[in-house]
Length: 145
Length: 66
Image (cartoon, rainbow over the protein chains, first blue to last red):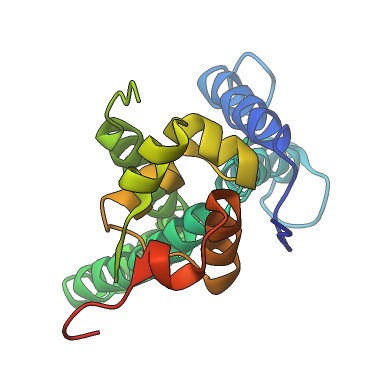
């Protein structure tokens, strides 16, 4: 099946590597020299904070996007349909979450919620899609015919 | 839409995995079509019918309410 706008299958593994790679950077922020005050005033490009942001957030987001939108080993129309359904539900759920959480938050919290919303829809999509794929494979009965 | 996929497979003596290989889809897809959880596209339905050497209407048929 010809599919457009999907990354090759191996990008799924690249996505996992990117996502996993950002974790130690966050955990060892101080040791890696990103936690120190002084040089970074929070403004401008390529200061300590900006590089930390690029290494962590962008690495995590790239990993999630690659993992979410890579082809399966055997890509067919049913999997495309599952992907589309999961994407629709992920958008619905994340916007419901966003609306509800914004309704019960003040200005400062709203900023944090918007930050969360950078990756929450992708995570919901990945969980839904993997769950549907898992459920599909569980349905298979051993046909000895 | 219902189908005779299981019967046709039995007549031809092929497994879901073999049928999936023949038409280039995953085994899950064949399984979901057989259990009426997924309605295939026209192209996929035609490919399946061609494997069994039968007209489309003998493999897939409309149900009441379709």
